[in-house]
Length: 69
Image (cartoon, rainbow, N blue to C red):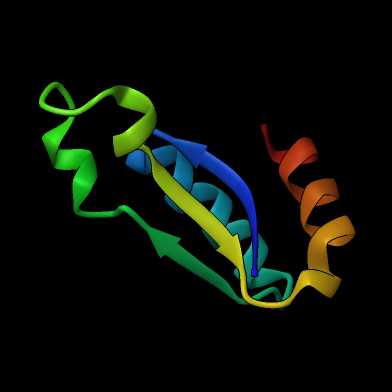
């Protein structure tokens, strides 16, 4: 697994996740529930993380992320 994107904006993370999954790239979200505690924890600890299930998808995922932002 490889971390490819993180943000405190759930909308942004879900948008990127949708773009990747529509391209056949399986993703996993981490810290999804921690984002509701922003302000109680440092922002960097409560950002939602988007991980790739397969490291071999990294180049394709980065290309999609960079074109989608």
